[in-house]
Amino acid sequence: MLNFTLTDLKYLLALAEEKHFAKAAARCFISQPTLSIAIKKLEENLEICIFERENHQILLTPAGNMIIEQAKKILGEAQQMREMALSYQNPYSQPLRIGAILTIGPYLFPSLVRDTIKLAPELKLILEEGFTTTLTAKLLTGELDAIILATPVTEAELEQTEIFQDELSLICSAKHKLATQAKILPKVLNDETLLLLGNGNCLRDQVLQVCKNNTVATNNISNQIISSSLETIKYMVEMNIGVSILPKIAQINLPANLVVKPFSASKKPTRTLSIVTRKNFPRKSLVKLIEQQLIAQLVGS
Image (cartoon, rainbow, N blue to C red):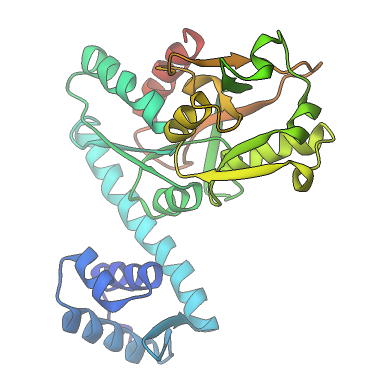
């Protein structure tokens, strides 16, 4: 007879993501022995080995991978049931938890909070920034209610609504030779030092795709410098260390000696911003409210 709780499944997911007992326990606000006992009992109850524990490494077994995926679904359904009950009482009774990728959140969240306070002061927002994969996983398990992405989702449980075409432009220092050109041919990037975000950022992949689509051989670019944030890249570009490609929504609070140049192309390079939620999310009227605010903000920018 199966005998485990939703809390046990939360512990299970924490360990699967952290791959470290101490970190998972801290994340769950419990002691490490408590977590270890809960995981052991769950494995005994299911009569399978979920984790391999060797040389201080925590690895998921093939069976464990399947269990983790099912645990995510169970927790997501449980969260949805709770939200359904609350939505019938009062859709504003619980905060709306919104996630955004790191190249979107800093530029949209401040105005979104300001506008929400004016339009629906009773609605409380909880905001989170992260990578696409992390945010999507949290949306599926009910830890987030909606996420703002710049890439398509493939999960059948989710629905995605496009809200904005975010044009990509070249940025360079006012002292750079490209600063005098009205429009930029993508092929000139072959001769430039290109500043990029690190692996895991979808904007990095989109920038490299712009290069690929315009016959720029990324392995022939004279140099690539990796940074952790768009804001750092802006200031490095201003210092004439190299050039970069910046989305329109991030073209605010630009350093004084940094200039923005559009690409010379029949079809301007863009990334598609969208808002994603679960198909069965009961408070869709609130997500629609957020969607309308974002569109108004983006169109007016």
